[in-house]
Image (cartoon, rainbow, N blue to C red; front, side, top):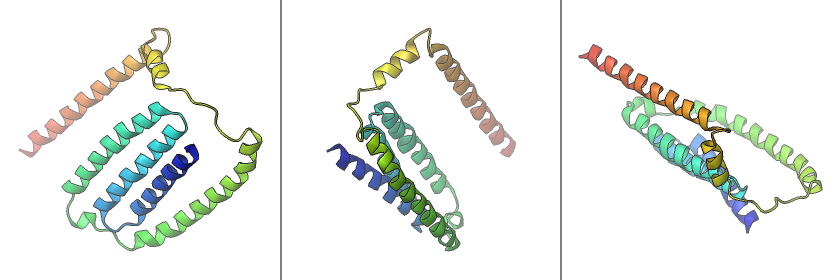
Length: 169
């Protein structure tokens, strides 16, 4: 069952990425990006990294995709057009990357099988990570410093945005 889920999520990530790169409509490309990011989140979950999978869904699928769609909606119609030159450049790049990944994967299969083949049973990681964040001797201070830094950046961004509004008026 785990092999099927891994193949399903890998296919979802790969097909979503290819559709995103080659679709002529930028809004459809954004939704293909959602599929690719869900595929990556599923890969994290099948590999036992539940915290990374949930973070992938919250930050990238939720946040970044919404920002991308707002940027598309706020851009002009001419800026959303994609030329055929994009395809001429992307096709060889994707082909070479695919050939590299297939070659690398085939080279790694004997190494992985010699090392034991499959992953052992996985344990949830979210509780361990949460305990480390709240442990005063581990990561609590860097976590709080990062939270304050992000707050300062947010206040600075709002200040700069309002200053731009006042200059325009």
